[in-house]
Image 1 (spheres, rainbow, N blue to C red):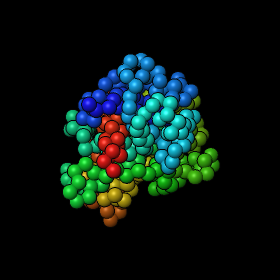
Image 2 (cartoon, rainbow, N blue to C red):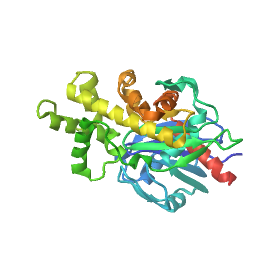
Image 3 (cartoon, rainbow, N blue to C red):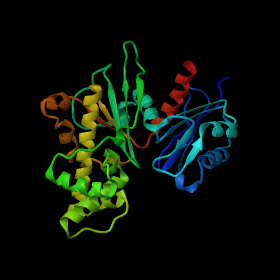
Length: 324
């Protein structure tokens, strides 16, 4: 009999939870809980287990929006911090695996069926070639899968690619990034390509315009101004966001040789609908000089945000850890 598994996808805004009765079984009692409602990750886990009423799981796997470099975890985009050992002891887990959330999502990419994906440009992915993953949300997640000879599942890449330095390509982008640099010093890709980044982009273009615009405090407000009210400053900020995302995704595709395709995760891009297809994303993805034709052939896919593939990826991480 397989031990019960508790699975968690911990982002900067929400924690998604489910449990499995076996490694190949379905996800049960999937829940999405706001992180802000709980003082600690332990409190969120305990609340979930109490609500669904399952026996104490013997195994657990977490994908978390944070680098995992040792026992201590301190989240970059939320206040939670915890010791893996302490969590394991508190809940009586015989095994606990904690990995980066986009590493978990990367592990699940081969499981995604065509009905869960929407293609934006490019041709057919090349089987056996590397695939890339990037996704803006509370932060900017980056990962990928490479396929050594004979491998069908792929080897996930764990890194912090969202914190690479962001480069401007136009004078307007230089002006915008100068404003962000005044505030942050180092302007990483995540500073512009995430929820808070979209707000900062709007504030920057509003400052450069020296007139118009509205007070905003969330990415949802900027998106609504752009897509519902046709606010010109919001539309410019949103297109800057998409252009920067395209540039970052193109860089990642070149770095990995991701001829298998680029997957777009996170919750922000799907909310833009088909407007995203008309944005500067794809043009900037391909705008790499002599390698334009190389990138033009690479497909990009938007992952359906209603599914929770990272939870399956976390489960796969338990299987991989058990096989080592």
